[in-house]
Image 1 (cartoon, rainbow, N blue to C red):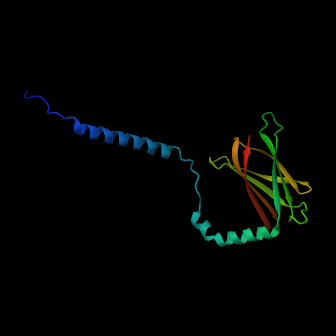
Image 2 (tube, helix red, strand yellow):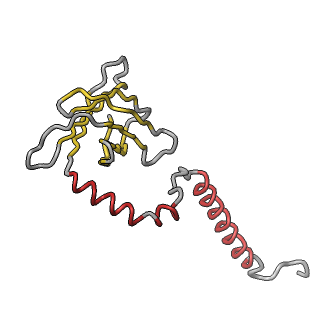
Image 3 (cartoon, rainbow, N blue to C red):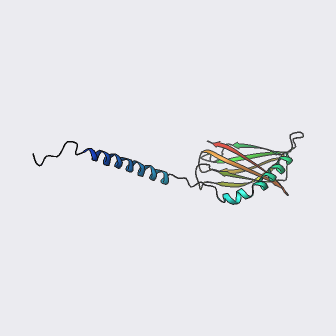
Length: 165
């Protein structure tokens, strides 16, 4: 049997086959990792890091104001119910808890898992410290709502996670 192959001639092919499986699986995982990236990242991280002490000072100034913000979601009245009204009630320090009128109030909605769906709106004063505006959010689910209230040089910011049905 001069043409017969020796026993175990195919053993090296086991190694080649195993390495081919590893390469294919790694290629699929790399393709999925790159293809499913949401694109959300921190912009200007170096500049934001340099402004850290300024952010701490702004947080202390906000604490001295003692304002509180309550956010409420009112059901939509449109055909699909998508035109929800967001109401923000702003009050002064807890001791006297007076409603604060005459503020410039803005609300920003950021989708934490998807880029490109952010929405911002200016809220109109309704009296008694309540500010409201109809807002249409393009997706149901979890949103980050950032409320900014300003009066002159005083700025108050409050961030909440909300779930929109």
